[in-house]
Length: 198
Image 1 (cartoon, one colour):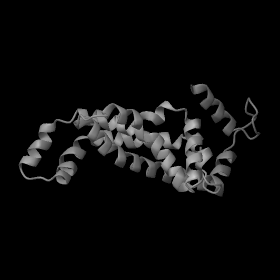
Image 2 (cartoon, helix red, strand yellow):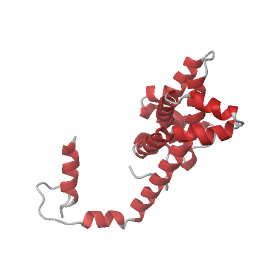
Image 3 (tube, rainbow, N blue to C red):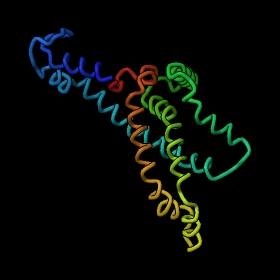
Image 4 (tube, rainbow, N blue to C red):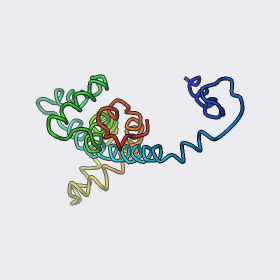
C-alpha cells in the first residue's frame, strides 16, 4: 500500500517526468500545481463539495437514523435496504443512472446534480454511523428532559446532539473523505468548468 505513495513522491521531486531513479531534486512540480488556476479551482470545488455534501448527508441521515433506531414499523427493513442501496450498486453504474435521470428531468450535469450525487452516495455511511451512536444513547436522558418541560427541539439540541457528537463528527469526516474520493460520480455529473480535484 505504501509503494504507490513512495513512487508518486519520488516522481514528484524528480526534475524530469516519469523517470526513475530520480535524476535530481526539485519542488517545481509542486509550485506548478499550486500556481495553476485550474488546480486551485478544482481544489476549491472539492473542498466546498465535500463540506456541503457531508453537512447535507448528516442533516438527512440524522432523522432517518432516529426513525430506524427508535421505532418499529411495517416496512422498516425495506426502507433500511433502500437507504443502503447506493452501497450495493457499483459506483459507475450508480453514477450513470443518476446522470441519465438528471438529464431526463432537465437537470443534466452541473454543480447541483454533482452535490446531490455525492450526498446520495455517502448518506448510507452517515446513517450507519449515526444509528450506532443512537443505539448507545440512553433514552432515559431524553425522557428526563421531556419530563421537566423541554420540547422536542430543545431535547434534541441539549441532550441528543451533545451525546452523539462524536458520531456526528466521525460521520462528517468520513463523508468528507468519501466525497473527496468519489471519482466516478464526478466524471458523470460535474460540469466542464467545475470539476473537483480527484
